[in-house]
Image (cartoon, rainbow, N blue to C red; front, side, top):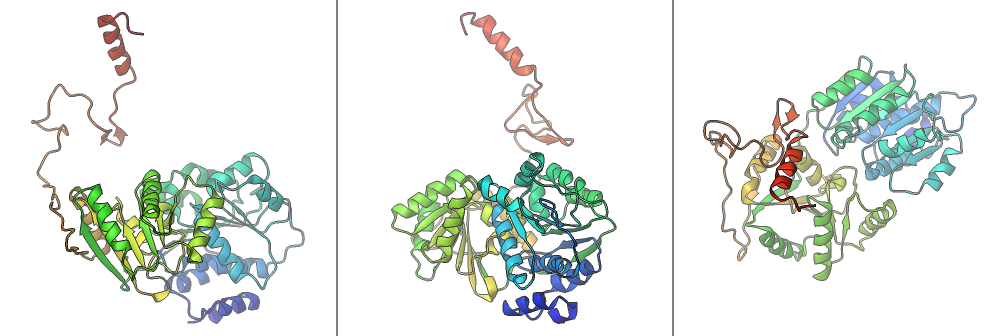
Length: 439
């Protein structure tokens, strides 16, 4: 099969060929004909499978072939929702690449950017809006944008949007569009919450499941056991001195950790920078541009860079902090080995990370090989948790009976087991009785 078989508009087909693509990927072969036929779809596919083009090409085909007598200001006909600014920029770039030979007007609305340019963009007749849910809601509430003419609603990385707490925003946005719209939902994973959303906003969707390996064969995966944070830092210092590492993406669990780690690497003489959600969009764009131009060798990021970041020059991905979810691991290491190149993914594993490592290996179906650097050998082994071992204060006969509330909230029966609202007040009253002078 080739892209010609989809009978796309000649301008779109020419642009696809100019981008160097001739044969569609499996997700494109399955999704594009169904979308062109007008069906709602749910498409599940892993990262790097080409699902962006699977919805961008049919969206552009709709604009190229459907005649509109009058466009209205601030009333798009196509809406694409993404969870992050980086992913929105990637989708916008794909739209520009594939639609450069046809006439349309697109607007990107994301947080972290000034409102002025976005308001000026919305003052023109607009065809496509690419947006993150939060900023889109801002424009809707301010009556700068009207979704009543949206005929095609696309949710990209829907699972990530729900993970970020956008489920209510997505439902609100969907309610503002046409009742008979076409809806496309693209996701890398599937769960009950996503199923509930799909049942609410999609109409008899066709399900597309692309069975692919969660990880790529061209990515070498390694793990290094680390005793503690200091040991991690010494391992990282050794690895970034490797000349085979042309550009590296280092993942940190927190924004503060990313900033600290980037500063430490800069102090060691490396061209490094941080990337996370607290940065303004302009700073994030400059950082990514410097990375693409080769001015930076090391980028320390949170999971904001795990999806939607397309840097073909990344030779190494280093998980300084192991992700807690196996899906995030797959997205992280997918940032290397792009476009068929060879890549290396290295993970630092602490002794108490055994359960997370086991989940990753079970999800990917691959065992990650352990490597040891001479002189930086670990002194502690992975702590294998016994299934029969009861958690401290977690219940059972051995649990102290006078311990009502403990540690972090524990989920029980679908609700968090927190102290009642009056508990702290009673504690304060007892303290005041013992110490009347306390204020």
